[in-house]
Length: 320
Ligand code: UD1
Image: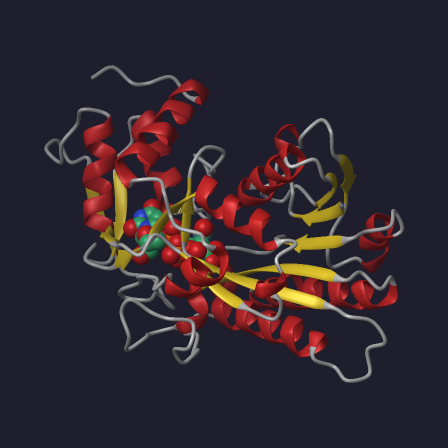
């Protein structure tokens, strides 16, 4: 297949592009390099530096003749969604609507969308199944949910004259190599590893008892790749998490231990909690197991070791 990966120079998108190429697909990438980096782009991919908010940029990719689109590009920071709500709205919602308009114009039959566990908000149910109420509490969660609904409502339009099959993945806290080590607006594990490698203290927002479900990048890629041509996933929405949760305090302790360090010496500092944060997060992945035959395979300690190995090769390890 000829597949567009939006955000394909970023952490998740570039790993997905690698996975699709390994399966023999041709990949076109559109990325504006806000957080993505061109060295992440596989050499085999056609690369267009462009922005999903600009219809013309995206159209260059669609004009290549696409069989499928994996729409990953997005503004990913909860904090930025509050400080810059219109940017979050434009990138996440307008970007998705542009992708949808072009899927219709070019009659692209398949779209996979990168949704997020933030759509649930404060869920009563833990672990949370896909059937739980979606009531996002961050502006970011609102734009991810709105986009997810745009995607699925478009596929259900009765006025379409071709079969448009869509699938959304509500991804949990994805971690692994290529996560940013130097960007405070990116995922927490990369931030902590970058802090430790630069010999800085790690900062925990709030009391650190909030929990997250960490899922390794390779597990996520496996789900996306296997869903691509699987009709059982058409119209579906799937959680992609590990089904386990760690508190941020535990995560900090694991990260410290990976560098043979402890909390002594003020290596952990606490700062006020941030707006829009879910307290506890844990995926129920029964649906993905049943429909996709997928399961999260990477144990956290092994995934952490892989990520530390990668990070240490980028930034030299500090003296113990
Ligand atoms: C993350 C993603 C979001 C994605 C969601 C679900 C980022 C920036 N956000 O949101 O795009 O949709 O997972 O997969 O990648 N924390 C600290 N210290 C720090 C940084 C973070 O204590 O230096 C805490 C936060 O306050 C939060 C937790 O760690 O409680 C996780 O934060 P973060 O990695 O930013 O991700 P989410 O907000 O969970």
